[in-house]
Amino acid sequence: MNYFVTENEITVWWDLPECADAEAVYEVTLDDVRAGETKHTHFTITGLEPEQTYEVRATMNGGAWEKTLRVSTTSQKRRIDVTAARYGAVGDGATMNTKALQRAIDDCGSGEQVYLPAGVYLTGALRLHSNMELYIEEGAVLQGTAEVDDYLPRIWSRFEGTEQECYSSVLNLGELDHDGDYNCENVVIRGGGTIASGGQKLALAMIASETERMKEELAAMGDLIRECETEHTIPGRVRPRLINLSNCRNVTIAGLTLKDGASWNVHMIYSDRITTFGCTFISEGIWNGDGWDPDSSTNCTIFGCRFFTGDDSVAIKSGKNPQGNEIGRPTKHIRVFDCACAFGHGICIGSEMSGGVEDVKIWDCDLIHSMSGIEIKATKKRGGYVRDISVKNCATSRLMFHSVGYNDDGISAGVAPVFEHCTFENVHITGSFLDHEHLWHDCDALELIGFDEPGHALSDVRIKNVTIGKEDASRRQTISLQACDGINIENLRVL
Image (cartoon, rainbow, N blue to C red; front, side):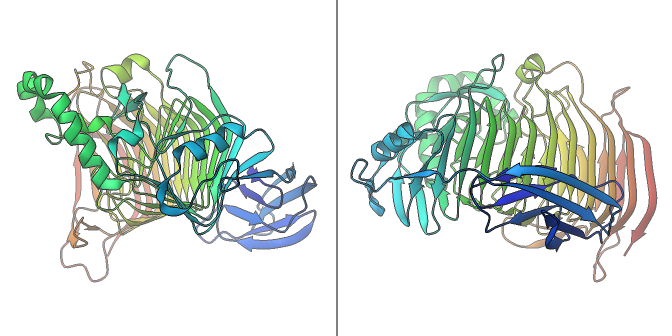
């Protein structure tokens, strides 16, 4: 059992027990006193005392499964109010507060908390450091501008699988080093407020600026541009994220609305133990507007979140050929549960997966209102692998393993990817998706396509207790299989 603790709250979460079914109920006790029950694999206990040790126990179905931990609440942190005289931040939505906010962040030590009361705090790029907390009160908005120069200097980052200079994000943690250790750790970003940026307006301004700067370089690329998704793909890679985490460890993001990054909203690169819960992601109408992207990172968890995204709600990545193969840092031990996609592409693995992806567990998620549902994707050039993926107790628009034709401008790895060892159990697949115009379309519920090279077929996939289709469907359902080996389908129900 894992936990996050403050001075007066404990949030606990746990992996879905092997013996759990979709109707499992968990009782949670605090020092042997019943705190409540839940059908979810997480629970928050409030109203606790600072600096006290408690025993928390979660028990499933009266004792079929049980976990216990002892955990201590923190001390009451000293608040650094950004509107206080030393800092002078103004939450009027018009005053630029970058210097004031950065001064408060720089002053924040262990046991302290940078505090934003209600208001709209206009800012450019900010840089957080180890052993600090940023608390954004309900009614407070940390609002990044739509001005390109407010996100200087550029920093070394990774976008769509390639390391390069990008504009700084609204919040920047750590410094990128694929050979180095973690250099930013023990950070908390939480509250009931909002972190927002300049969205599509900022993205287009950055693309225009970069296109002009790269004019000769882009012209020299010639036909290579045709391998990109659009003419904006290459200059668009300089766009910042909303929150950029590089070489970070033990970072918690909780309770916030995360909105309108110029590209992805939360991007963790070469990082470990990044936990996000109770957040709402909003990026509808933003090109590449991903929600939460672990990239060559480990032990990352997201739960209890809701997505309204312009692209993938969750995108699990590990680099792009050839650099991703050479660096060879896989993404592994990822947990996604009790999340809902109200709009967006759903949960995707790839297409940048050249460093490998393994041990991903997804459960109790509602992806019916997504475009892609659960999608495992690559291009034939990628190399790498995706394996040991488990999906349980979910509802989704569709399930796809396939090769895609976009973002394919890298030099080939010389070998196709491998997709293998995946399980889908107790899943309802509707065979109908919601597009960017909020229109519904019928589609194949199951698209299982490997790579047509010896040893690279989609292999060892188990589909058990899965229902496909809808009661009022206007078309007959089909299942597409190509380049497959060892596909085991047990108890498939077609509506």
